[in-house]
Amino acid sequence: MKNSESRLQCLRPIASLTPQEARAIRYVLMDIDDTLTTDGKLPPESYAALWALHKAGLIVIPVTGRPAGWCDMIAREWPVDGVVGENGALVFWESEGRRLKSMTHPDAVPNSDPRLAALRDQVLAQVPGTRLARDQFSRLYDIAIDFAEEEPILPLSDAQHVKALFEGGGAHAKISSIHVNAWMGEYDKLSMVIRYLSARFSYDDDRNRATVVFVGDSPNDEPMFAHFQMACAVANILKYKTLISHFPHFVTWRESGAGFAEFTATLLERRAAKASP
Image (cartoon, rainbow, N blue to C red; front, side):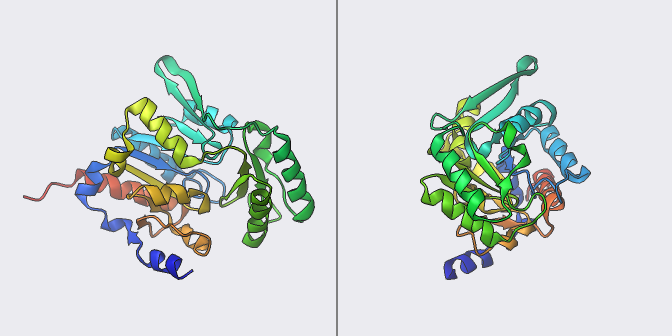
C-alpha cells in the first residue's frame, strides 16, 4: 500500500508533457470503457479526438477488454489502425481495399474450455448479483462478468472476489471499470500490443518504447501502465488506487471521455509548438 501511495504521488499532470516528448510519439493506444466513453456512451469530444489523432498522422489503436464482435465493427468504422480486444486475445484491422484482417494470440484458448465454464458457474453461484456481460455472445476467448455495466452496480469488493475465484481455479482475471474478464492462456493486453506493432509496423520494443503512449483508466490497464514510460491515465483512475501497484507517468485533470479529449488536445498542441532556439 505504501509503495502504491508513493507511485500515486508521482503522477505528473498531462499539462507537463514537453514538446520533445510529444514529438517523439508515433503510436497512441487507449482503453475504451471509461477512457473514451463517459457513463457508457462515446461522447463527441472523445470521438473527435480520435479523428484529430488520425488526421495528425499518428497510429491510433484501441486496446480493450471488449469482445471480438465489437472489434470487427470498430476496425471497420472508427478512425483507427487496429483494435486489440478481449484483453489481448486478438486484434482486428482494416487493410488496403477495406479488407478486414485479424490476428489471434497463439496462446489464446477458446472460452468453451470446460475449466473456464466451470469457474464461470462457480462465480455466478457464489457471488450474488453477478451475471454474464450482455456482450458475452460475441466473445471468443474470455468470460466477462458484469459487476458495474448494468444494474445492480456491485462494489469493487465483489469484483475482487470474482477475480480471486477465477485465479484460484487457474484462470487469468482482470478487473475493468465494468467487468471482470477471465481467460485461460498466457497473454494480456501488453503482449498482444507488442506482437501486433512488431508484425505490422516494424516496431522494436527495446528501441521504440518512448514512441508509444497508452491512455487507460482501470486495473486491467496496469501491464500497459507499467511497461510504457509515456502512459497516461484519465482522472477516474483514482477510484482504483488501492488496486493498482503500477501507475502511469501522466494523469489528466478530467475524467473519462473528457479526460481523453484533454490528453489529445495537450499532445497535439505540444507537437505543434515551436522548438526552443
